[in-house]
Amino acid sequence: MAGCTSTVEDIPRTSATPTPVNPAQVAGVPLPEGAVADAVAQLDRRVEELMDSSGIPGMAVAVVHAGATVYAKGFGVREVGSSEKVTADTVFQLASLSKPIGATVVAHQVGKGIVDWGTPVAEKVPGFSLADPDTTENVTVGDLYAHRSGLPGHAGDILEGLGYDRQQILERLRLLPINPFRNSYAYTNFGLTAAAEAVANASGTDWATLSQQALYEPLGMSTTSSRYADYAARENRAVGHMKIDGTYVAQAERDPDPQSPAGGVSSSVNDLTAWLKMLLANGEADGRQLIPAESLLPAISPQNVSSAPTSPDARAGFYGYGFDIDISPAGRIILSHSGAFASGAATSFVAIPSADVAIVALTNAAPIGVPETLTSEFAELVQFGEVRQDWVGLYEKEFPPMPDPEDALTDQVPTAPIPSPLATYVGSYANEYFGAAQVTEREGALILTMGPEGLVFPLSYQAGDEFTFAPARKGGPTGMVSKASFIGDTLVLEFFNANGLGTFTRGAP
Image (cartoon, rainbow, N blue to C red; front, side):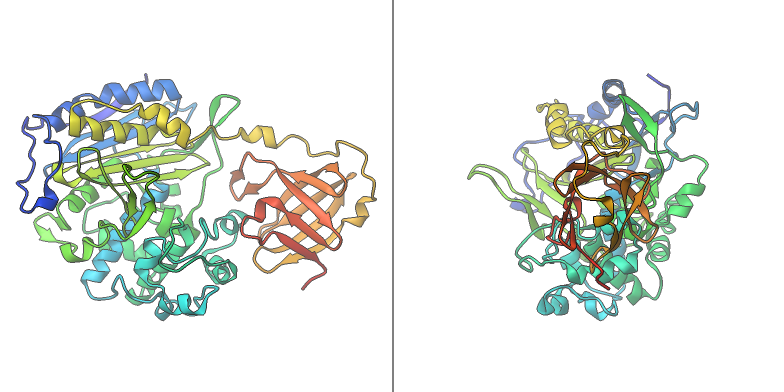
């Protein structure tokens, strides 16, 4: 196992559980004596075992308890082939761990009276609209942070992958089908980003600057940013990796600026300990109330059912405003969130307010459940003194192996004689949501070009008027293969058709 750098403090052997003041705060199982100290004592071994079994290049982990950082370590390397070690100050891309961090920025502005969780987004974002006029008028900052706007899951993500910017994507949300308002749950990056835009506009600045001024600077998070350029400029930063032919390889980096409020934060575990301490202290930091407790509480309270029970004896999962919220088997509230970029970032945090403890784990590899396994094991050790579930196996099911990108990037040449001349398919096709698609002939094969930056997808003939292509996003492949069907003057692209919007018309303006 590669070396690590560390900060570890002695931890009191008491459970440090606050005395409950009402029945709703009483857990079903008391904390074991010295629960946090014993759990922290096992972290080195558990991290090393996970890294050895998974082969991921690097990882950083930190734990805060009772207002102090009690563990902060880096393991492995920042980039395969380099000797530069991961430290507790190494900056990682956080992906969707950005959502709860951003929610605390919103809570800060709620506390200042700039906005409210109930502020309609359309009041603060000129031209904002969804497919349903009533939803457009009434959808709030909180609705979008709770994923209950009615937008379909991951609305706008493919547009980002094609190279569209934030404004272009938000303008196209109106073209997506809408589900029941405030009566559904669908996880969306750009719905939440629209809410953050409303907060930034109300504050008179951009989101990255607001985050810096409201949260990062007051907490002393000097290596944390919501701008990709800042991450890219850090000398001590972890590079993303994907597994190709069984080996982790550094990939083209992901620029998440279009969805910065939802996935664009970069930080180190040392910086994140300041945020976690503030979170566990109900918005207090360094002896002052940075965020009013009453503004923060709605974010970390259930606002939507994210995972409905599958049987009468099953617990539900909830989502607050940017936070996953669950009730553990011990009867304790668990705050958490994960983040993932297929290009090579996987992150997780778990906080147990009743035990005054939180853990964060950051990795520089494509998501396979490693950080979630560690944080889940730690949460069980704190609550029960032992790991009771096979978290490795559970997360293997949750994160099935990603397709090897190389498998989808073989030479895209016809596999059988094409019955129609290629010129039959050549032309300019248009789609209101995805924009233009150009089909051209090159060296006896068809080429599909899409997006503002002209992403190229070679088409491979299959049968009839059907071809296949390997979808890709700006910055890297998806590892998938999809179908392209020519039907008269239309082109249907299966990968882009999840919401029935994948039909392109030839010659349309």
